[in-house]
Image (tube, rainbow, N blue to C red; front, side):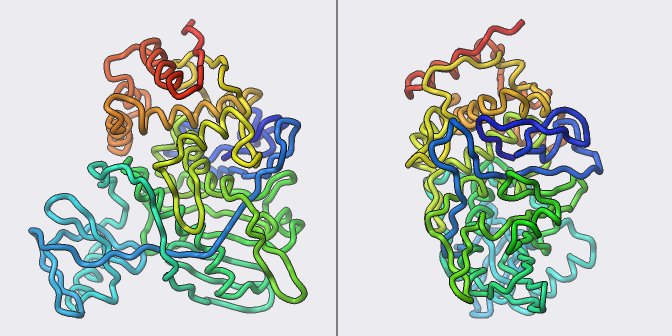
Length: 442
C-alpha cells in the first residue's frame, strides 16, 4: 500500500485506524491467516503536494532468455538441436526455469524444448512436483537496469458485451469495455516490467504461487463501476489479496488511473501519467508473503520500487538514489509527489520503528513512516556493510526458511545494538545529504 501526506484515517474492519488511501496487504502476524486484506493506491491530493501523483503507462514487453553453455545435470534439448545440462526448477507460465551447476538460472519457452523435455515437465506436474518459486537468486549481483523488450504476446481470451479478457505472460486483464489486444499490450508493459524487476532483485522476494496462473487485474471504464466492485473514494485503485497459499489476489483499477482516455469512439493513453504509485502496489501483489511481516520492509521495498526511475519498460536502479532522496525529502522529481520530510527530520527509535505494528505504521505519522521506510530499504540494499545487501539477503533467507521475523531481524543487526545500527544509518545518510535523527530507545 502507499500512503500520501495529509491523508485522513478510516476504520479498517479488522481493527485499528487505517488511512482511507491505504489498507494493509498483510499484517505482520498474519502469515497463516485466511483473511481478506486490501491495499489502495491513490493520487495524493493534499496541501503538501504541488501536483498530484499520476499513473503513467507506456508500451513494451517481456525479456527472453536463450540457451547458455553446458553445465552438469539432466540434458535438455531445443527444437534446433542445441543442448543444455541443468536441473529443472519450476514451470513459470509457458517457460521452464532451469538451474545450471553454478547456480545460474535460465528460462526457456516450452515451445523451444523437445517433445521429450515437454513430456518430462508434464510428468513432473502430474506427480505433484513443487511449483513454487524458490528464492534462488541471492548469488546474483544487484542490477543497474532491468529492461523488458516489446516482444511479448497478448492473447485475447474473451470479447463479449460487458466482459473482455486478455492475457500477457504473467497477468490476466479483465475489462468491462473493449480495449483490444493492442491497447492491452501498451498498458501491460508496466505490469510485466514490474514483475520482471521484482523477480530480478537478488533478495529472494518471489511469490510462491502456482506459476501456471496469472495475476488478475480488473480494469473499469467508469470510476463508479470501480467503486461498485470494491474500490474506494479518493483512491486510484485497490489491491485485494489474501494470505492463503497460492492466492495471487487481484488489482482493481479505473481506466483514468491508467491514463486511458476516450477520443471519439477509440481509447488513447495519456503518456503524462506517473507510474510510481501503481508500481508500488504491483510490488505488493508480487511480493513474497514472508516479506510482508515487517511493516517497514513491506512498505520500504515497495517504496524503493515505486521511486526507482522507470520509462519505456526500463527500471534504472543504478541512478535511483537521487530520485528516492527527492521523493522522500521534497515533492519529487518534476513536482509529481513526494513525502516532503525535508533533509533534516526526527524519527522514532529504530527498535520501535522496526517492530511497529501495521496499524500504527499507517496511522497519523504514516507519511514519515513511509518516507523513512524507503531510506531504510535503500540503506540495507546499498549502504549497509560492504554495500552488497548481504545482511538483508540473510534476513530474507531466514524468513523464507520459516524463521520468525523477530529472529530474522537479528541477522540485520548482526551483533549490533539498535542504537549502534541507528548511528550507522544516520552516518551513511548524512553523507548523502539527509540528516535522520532517531530517538533513543525507551
